[in-house]
Image (cartoon, rainbow, N blue to C red):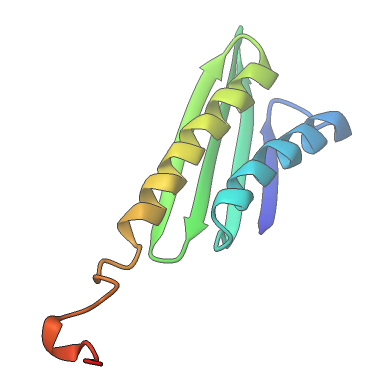
Length: 108
């Protein structure tokens, strides 16, 4: 998983980078096929805003969160993206029955 962090009117500190990495490791635990992640952090007056786009095979997942605290905004963002990844994973799962059709089952 490639992670690209960008700060808009904000300097990305090593502590902030490590916090984002630890939170996004939860998403990669649920779904291994995340190609890359682009995270943009910005400060607009008193609001801390975090946006992220996950590139997964067949889709791009996007979420944004705003809060007074940057760390809680990151927490809410990863919760949103985690739900989206689980939903994407369910959609693209195997929809075929495990036994298959009756005529294709081996008779003993």
